[in-house]
Length: 378
Image (tube, rainbow, N blue to C red; front, side, top):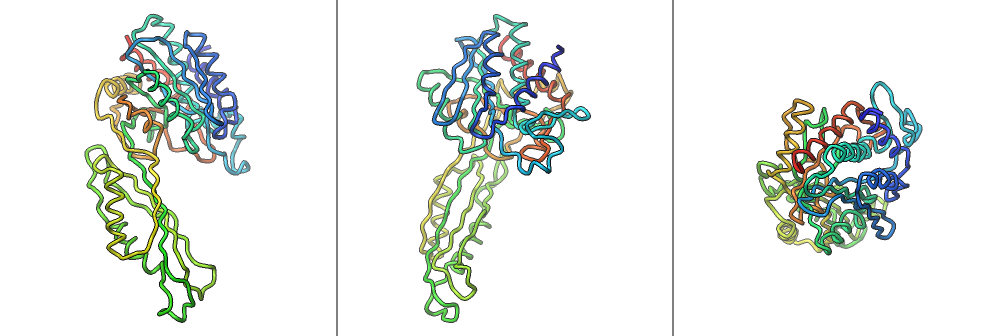
């Protein structure tokens, strides 16, 4: 088989497993068989209903870890797909299927890159690892976060983490993510006094009370961002209030909002500023906060340089560094001190109907991964 066929075949084998989060559906068994054959020690780590794989070749440092997830989001209405989402379909040089872009193709490219690299450099320096979880698309509690806790407890330190999240805008390699914004959300409950709308002096309308405060929060300049991050953004995602009757003022209003924030501000500053604004408007309220990820940034270093060189070698492109998008499992790895970079296929079709990846670029990605290994571990 040609390298292209090997990578494509493995991607198809993984897509054919309906691994709806957090079910791995046997994907990691496929990976273990391939990795064990080239000298990886494979360890399955199960936390509750989540299956994780830590596969490592070598015991010394430095350690380059590929990271990814086998779980996928639900396909949505099957009748809207042009082919079964869990039956890989190739049309006009494009591979279709749920997980094709996010991120089973990346995992296939990682494995075939490792196979070629080990065949060429059986005595490479340092160590290579794959950290694969089936809990990235859901609540992400028992996946990478727990694996990192396990590794930290026994003193295994990752120097470089290369995550296969889809990062390209138009072509593979045109963009890599060298960081992500933090994410903090809140559920705000504003208390009022319920009553008949015809007697405004006997009620306290929580919707009316909330609006000026929410307007100020939405217009507030939290920071101005920096070279790598846009300014922090505040977005209201849900407002719920009322009994369903047009003539009843509700007794409370619920508001959910989220902030995606840069390294120019921290979660406690956001909480404190929000409290000051709410108190300024004399609201009677309760608020529950939830931090789903802290911001992280790898502004420079060996991993960024190695990736830029590999991308230029195989695509001729000068890649851009970005921190846009949602959260990723990099938020669990970066606090250990590792350099973290996200490099994967084009992200245009992720989570969509007819998710897909360009087959030619799939092999390019595998070659890029191999060159990064060679740049760092030879």
